[in-house]
Image (cartoon, rainbow, N blue to C red; front, side, top):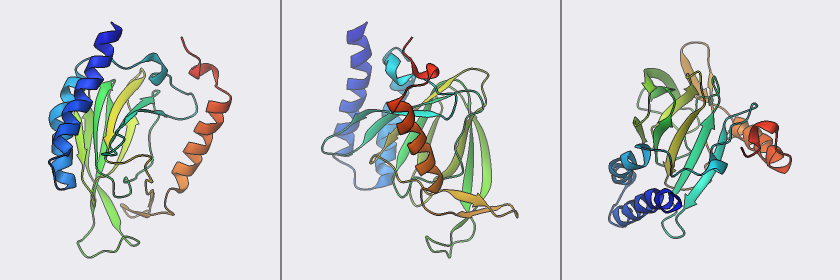
Length: 210
């Protein structure tokens, strides 16, 4: 079983690495990952137990792999029922995200207008997707603004492949008129990361290995 668990991730990394060596932009990079990731989402035995631990306080995120030269990273996020992100982007980093277990609601946002600066960008919700195991979302800068929340009655797990890691997401606040505007960069995420580091230092019962 251990050999099978390693091979699924190893084969994915090998395929993506070869593909990324030949691409020239973020759109092509996400398409390389989009073609490879279905095999990784087809079954979950490859994901080790230490990357499956939820927290009662916040969704948990684990770095599974980061390529030493190409920089892309594979990350697992574990969500208890009702846990989710704020409205955010990925700070200019491309990404591909897929559901491994559970059902995750993805709210996607479009930019309002075409004449904007990075500081004054406004976005508006455009689509709502109930993403289930095997479903995939591509995020290509400068767009890819979204929010994710676990709408299952059980723990959900999503797999993320980013062009770089760690991320510096930008958070968007509700303006009260149906649009969202850019907050101070990373403000909410800094709180999430601070809480996560605190839990690492003193694990909660939810994080103890089974």
